[in-house]
Length: 73
Length: 223
Image (cartoon, rainbow over all chains, first blue to last red; front, top):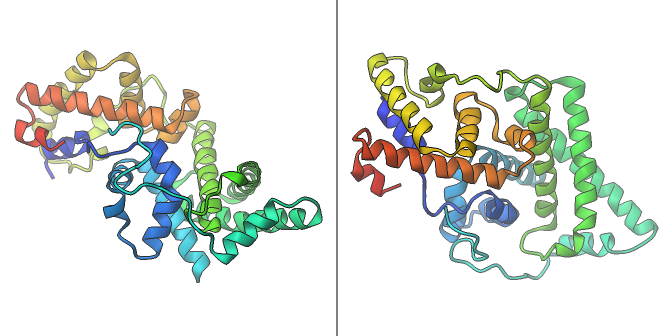
């Protein structure tokens, strides 16, 4: 990847992004849908956009999903 | 970024019927006396297991090891139990109870890791480490001349377009690699506010670079 495309990718923002507060508020619902194989991203596109863009919320999503899946085994 | 909107996408959130396990957690935690105490102890045991799993998952990327990690997990579980028992009547059955409860302990782990960063900060806060930006953005070491132009343009935009708060957040997170949750703690703010500040800064910088011909308008329309 060259410099311009790397910077372009970093600066690009998604207008559907709901922000951390709403994503955190709904994270348990979103994770249960993902764990059940339901189309969470289609139902909540604003949360999906946020989780792709926000490192800390993405990390929390990964952790919560891992916890749910570990507990199921 | 979309404004606050309870629909969060297209599907309104409504209270749901509880599954049997969730209903039992809810019933026991809203009792009084020994039954509730036993349930709180079970909750703590469950959350401590989740917290230990989470710090182990994140551990390799952290500068925290051994007893400190165990202490962090223990504190996260204890604080999550307090938060959950205080908010138990807010549980509406929109997910399994355990997923709702795990969320509290995952958030506690994140917050405590953010706070821990300042015990051993890796960069002076007043530094502006522009030279490492190409690496941070995932670009290879080639195209040195291109990066020189790019960094000069970006630096002008940062100096001219951003508010002092946006600049402070951009420098800390993007240039100095301060974790967002650590900055939240340092600025006594919250994750949403810091993210929104950085989101707005990114949008402004992209618009400025496009206006000056560095990034294409065609790309800008999709942002």
